[in-house]
Amino acid sequence: MKFFFNKGNARTTRRVVVIGIDGTPQTFLKKHIAAGDLPHLKRITDGGQLHQMNSVQPCISSVAWSTFMTGVNPGKHRIFGFVDRKPNPFGIFLPNAIHMGAKTLWDIFSEAGKRVAVINVPVTSPPKEVNGILIGGFLSVDVLKCAYPREFGAELKQWDYRIDADANLGRNDKEAFFEDLFVTLDRRLEAARRIFEREPWDFFQLHVMETDRINHFLWEHYEKEDPKYHARFLEFYGKVDELLGEFYDRTKDDTEFIVLSDHGFCTVKKEVYLNQWLEDRGYLKLTGDQPRSVADMDSSSRAYSLIPGRVFLNLEGREQNGAVPKGAEAEALTNELAEALLTMTDPDDGSRIIEQVVRRDDLYTGLYSQEAADLIAIPYDGYDLKANVRQPSITFKGDLVGMHTFWDAALYVKDRQIQIDDFGIIDLAPSIMKMMDMEPLPEMDGRSLI
Image 1 (cartoon, rainbow, N blue to C red):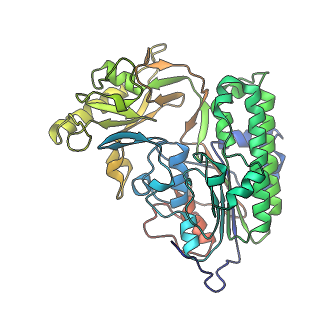
Image 2 (cartoon, helix red, strand yellow; image 1 turned 135 degrees about the horizontal axis):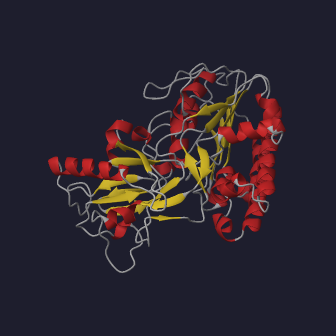
Image 3 (cartoon, rainbow, N blue to C red; image 1 turned 180 degrees about the horizontal axis):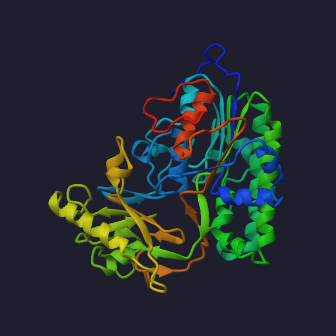
């Protein structure tokens, strides 16, 4: 068990508040600030700047927020996707806080005697011990068990706290989905208000996951100004705007205030099933009549994929039933796959699907980098790379109509001028440490923006 101590007057003169609005594009915010739809964000950003920021690759919330909270690349923090695999014995799992391989901001601040309050950030479940309060993110399964201290879960239950919106409603009943989004946001806001006001904290972070949820299921309807959904879509963002205004007003002048998102969004043109592509070309072989995932691949398989766009060799000595010898043969297959992926085209209009294919060692460094995929395929915006197996075709238009983009995350920092032009979410952890009068850890890959 860890013990946290107040180290004299450990509280800094300037505290930090962070509000995360998952998957909200900077271009969207700027457009609707200008249109008068987000009046609170307009007054917040007046006199400052709402920056456009890069995400990470792959630009998945669990990877991006892990990078935010640690300031290191995935090769150091060990979160490479929404799902991952154990190579031997082979299995698929959902990475969570147990798998985190680097210190988070709240670890660092807790060890320094500073108090934290962290609400709903991805990859914080199951909740670890901190000097303060931590409420786990969307992978939490039970309100009673989603918080540290453990007994705080009972209070959340009394407040009718909601961990996440119901994604199934987004597929099956969009009107009910809207209602669920509003209720979930309202319950989290109520919990955040209570924690903000009653708890002594030096670092406070509130995460809004529902912006990502609404974008996945309704972004295309928003972009097309669908009369059935467009107004309600903007109404929901109006509620998020009110939340930002409320916490900005609650924040004192000597407290830093940050608003950010972890990636952008665009309309899905097609889902692209890389495992089907691999199977059609003989790289992947599946067992049984109804395989459910790459966990059902035959031992003769040479390659397989996990979302989004991560391609692994079925390597001898690494995977449980590896079929590709290490050395020259593995190198040749890696090159062959990279070249073939770049030739993928949309069967309907001939558009290129893959913009870039990156080798693991060109993207990641650190203790866990060898656990990453051998190749990472980066698609053109609009092509959403999936890992479903045994599909009727390589491409399909599914029920998720919005997808993540790398280049359009958003960042606002109150009363701070950022002089660096090209920066990313990896730079936030060292920047926040500077705001807390602490030096960034030497292992951090990000740069302080202040």
